[in-house]
Image (cartoon, rainbow, N blue to C red; front, side, top):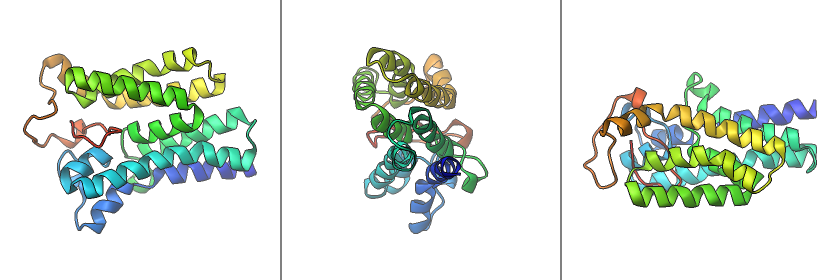
Length: 216
């Protein structure tokens, strides 16, 4: 019963749509402006850093909360359950019950999960994200690179198998959510930092990014 409670709590925490709630407080629905994405990037673009940065921080904290809840309720040695708590909080963000199972792309929330499960993995993926961003000026390319690097980082830092699986699955979901961005990169139409902002269809929403910068 306690395990089921922990799993349900993690999903519900992850499902809290902070981007939508922040928009509502400002009198707008972020799903109807900009790219239509609920994540920190679109909130930042639409409402500015005073709203976008707190939304990013809250989305990261959601990710941290999953493994924390697992450890607190089930014990620090319950690696499998803790890993599943991290996976469920990310799933809640991507498939929120409060938004008819729509949601964000799990970059910020995934970063929080990574940090709670293995700080070295989180730090290395974030460092790679920054390097690729500097080279390409594309947040999407940086995030895709970080997703692809996740299993390698997990192997390099010898994380427990349960954590390896959970973080790799989060990376896979995030990568799949970025397929529209990947197609635009291949076509040479993906916007870069500094480009003039313009809206894109909501089914091609921008990625969330751990820097609060803007990209589609």
